[in-house]
Image (cartoon, rainbow, N blue to C red; front, top):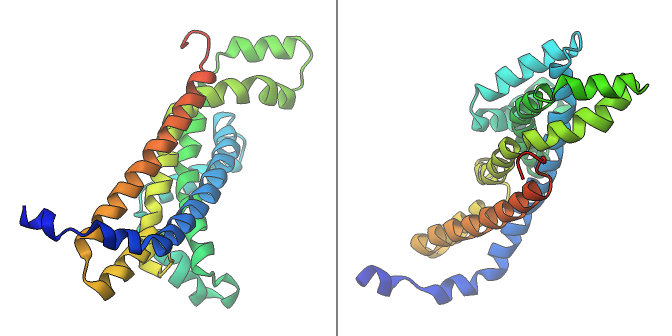
Length: 226
């Protein structure tokens, strides 16, 4: 009871403006990261599924490197490592943040879409080619829509992880939600309130995102899955 008595909800309310600013920054980075991860996943997933020479091999290396190294190391490499090579690769924290989650999410999404495109029944593509569709039109008209639906469940997990990984950007001083909360706690010594509010906000945002994406998933479900 003493812990609950010491917990000051009014203090959290007083910090709402700063916390809201941090949340907005978190959502901005997440939105860019998710959009970029989707684009990378579709492009490189298609290259791998169709075994396009050179591109497929390079995509495989990219996927292996990113998936097998900690994202925090990747963040430090972008923010601290690249500027050592050339000043032209010096990024601001915001740019580093969305680049890091986009590159990370893109690697995982590449495998999601590779599997999705590979699972499209060949008879569908064969039928479209028989109707006179070019391979490119077949991809956009048949493989992409069906493969995206197949890849959606695994992509959902990737997008949620992209959102949660934004908390790591506190390591480079980017003012996302976690960093803002830590800064407030460092000045006020109200660590408990800040830890709880971070957990609640992330839970609410991830839960809301999950509901939206699950709704889209049901709407786009293949006939046999509906």
